[in-house]
Amino acid sequence: MANGRVRRFRTTQQRREIVEETLKPGASVALIARAHDVNTNQVFKWRRQYHKGELEIQPKATLLPVRVSESVSIKTLPRNKSKPERRGIIDIDLGNARVRIEGAAEADCIRSVIESLCR
Image (cartoon, rainbow, N blue to C red; front, side):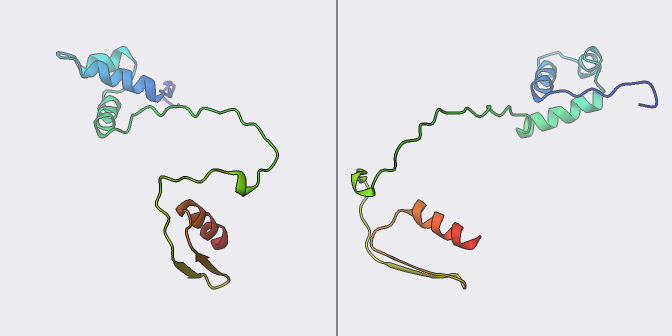
């Protein structure tokens, strides 16, 4: 920077820690900001974000092991008996395609079909 100061990036965790220090009884925002070499106004901005829930730490995604197997016929899959079966007919006209669903259909299945046709 022109004035010789270097702009530092603070992680969400670091911002939370600085803000939480300022929330302790008797804490001085100015002294805490100075101790961490942060502008006092920046700390007040982080405090507003903290109170709005904008400094929440998101859990990292975890990869799960996957095993690829031979295809399984639909007849061998167990049906979920806990959901009541619904009967009926649904006609959907999307302009370039027409879909007719008869009998019981899972909502996720219908959603996937419609999303695929809308692409």
